[in-house]
Amino acid sequence: MATIVPNNFLPDRLDCIYTKCYCEENVWKLCDFIKCRNPNALSNCFCVFISNKKRQIPLWCQKHSKRDDKLVLWDYHVIFVFKDNHQVLVYDLDTTLSFPCPSELYIISAIRREENLNEDFRRLFRVINAETFLKTFASDRCHMINMKDGNYFSPPPVYPPIKTAESTNNLEDFICMDEDVGVGTVMNYQQFCDKFLQV
Image (cartoon, rainbow, N blue to C red; front, side, top):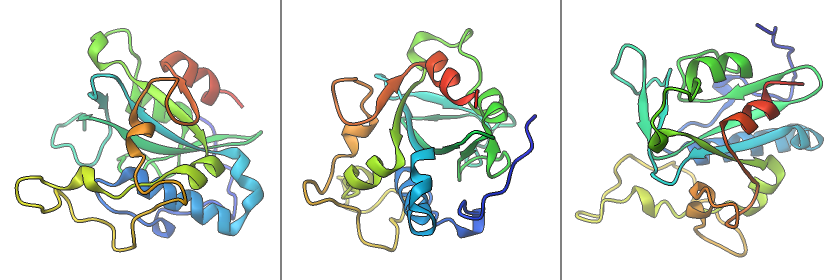
């Protein structure tokens, strides 16, 4: 397994702003952290939305799981990936794996191979350059509000909602795995591995 090469502009876990159940905002904040430290590094940084048309994707090694194998069935999940000429690192604030985690270990342990997965559970990956993600993402957090009582399913971040000049909420465009919707590139499992298992 590859040795992690330190970069002073990449955050430690304690540097990261984390709110449970708001993975998309956690990654946005991580991208923003790097932009403030080293804007030139954003070209090596990616936000990755993981979902599928059924909105049911299995991921392992998730700390919110009560199972021994730490399996969770998410409707979607979001991770951060850093890739340069030396290494590919995955930043997942919800994983039980190391932080950051070499991409090979993350793919083998958390994503896992697809041969034995039912078609309904096969994952797609919307890969977005970090700079584009920072400029385009917006969420008013309405997806986390219980329509019956108006309360949040999980407490929202303490900072204001993320918005752009064009939108206050386009989260669905990022979760959607239709290539004709939103920004970035939608990849299947093999395409994702081809991009992030090699440097």
